[in-house]
Image (cartoon, rainbow, N blue to C red; front, side, top):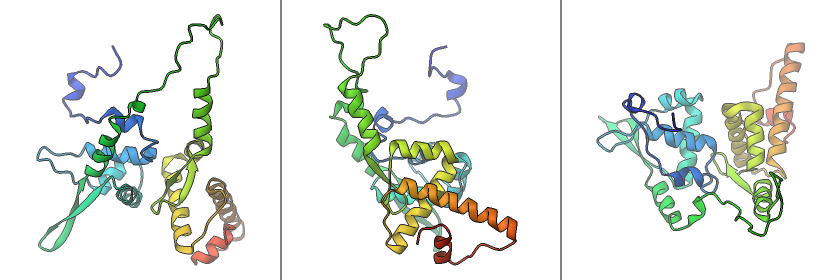
Length: 240
């Protein structure tokens, strides 16, 4: 069986069509894995009457995250200009939102003429005298690695948490997608409400988690309750 030759028995249940450009330009579009997942999940809710009004609860269940996290992702896509939502009401009561990804479509169209979406492959050097499957490091490889290491994308509801691709992937590997998203959103909200800035957001997230776990351990051993006040909680995490 060839890759991605699904067969009628699978496709009869429906399928989603997305341009390769959305996948290959994910990083350039500033989309996290959770952002892209939400777009694909929403696309699966597209109706034959050309309407799109996915349920946050259903999307959350599919993605394995809470409905509040779905709302944060939704707001992030709106802040990026990729999504527009219009309230649908009945008898004066809001029942759902109609989603419109025209902004994302327009952004993708601006990338069509740029053939950078084709995976770059170092050209064959006809003068290469190396034999066998020897490792050859090219300037392209070095540039790509440097870009991943140094360029930071913005995340969080307020687009103020800065992480490199490698840092974000480390968080995903360590905490999983749901907790990583929660930690990023907590930091984003705290920085926005307090006007805080940090030299390294990745290190701050790790520090918050360590202090949080340490506070919980101390709570179990002493029987004391965690403080509820936001400023005191931030102080317990060492972020005052």
